Amino acid sequence: MDFCSHLRLAAVLALLTGCASAASRGAGSFDPSRVVQLSWRPRAFLHKGFLLDAECDHLIALAKDKLEKSMVADNKSGKSVQSEVRTSSGMFLEKKQDEVVTRIEERISAWTFLPPENGEAIQILHYQNGEKYEPHYDYFHDKNNQALGGHRIATVLMYLSNVEKGGETIFPNAEGKLLQPKDDTWSDCARNGYAVKPVKGDALLFFSLHPDSTTDSDSLHGSCPAIEGQKWSATKWIHVRSFDLTVKQPGPSDGCEDDNVLCPQWAAVGECAKNPNYMVGTKEAPGFCRKSCKVCAE
Image (cartoon, rainbow, N blue to C red; front, side, top):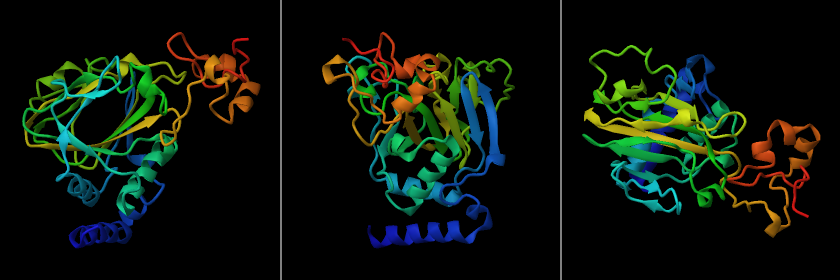
């Protein structure tokens, strides 16, 4: 870490430890009174003031000199490719890159009740005038990406800057899209679904899977073009199991072993019948507790 970066980090940490409001948002904690339910279809929630201004500025400073053209996952091969559906630029931080990043990751885990090891590294994104990300799903359509961590179950999208106009996060299939009032401060793009304005420090949590682990088509979402001002955001994708370690897909070829040490306990309490998509699997993908559910091929 260079000297300027060290001073910047020290200043952020001093602000975090010196402010009473920040103390309530220290490592592993968050303020549930700031959370607002936006929708049940998809399940989406907004945390007002999830990040301090200093934290937002710190994340931008870590990323601004390392940005590259954003990529998307090819639906068939799973490889990262460039596409006109996503015109932003971005980069990935390292997990626990510094004290500030670590605090934010722990806060995300506390809010979502999902362990830190299930999350990908935070991605910082920058949208300049006219740049966008057309509606898409965060869960995967290919099996290659599912092999590491399984589907993405949840997304935490943190807004690092205010945008004068445009840049809204939009859910075209959300149940409340026709009921949300919109005045002339919203972009035309935002009128095509339920929309969330980017406000510096706010964080949006939404789920890409239903509680029974099936994919949620209502979680379709996108980023409207930035019209006035630039948009900075930070994304944390969270998977159904650990993303830090490669887990073999179960099946006859590997002896049909359980992929989680808790599988026998879950099977004993009836989860094979209650949650068959995860435990046993579907036509598209095998489950992760097939041995304990006694569905292995003879």
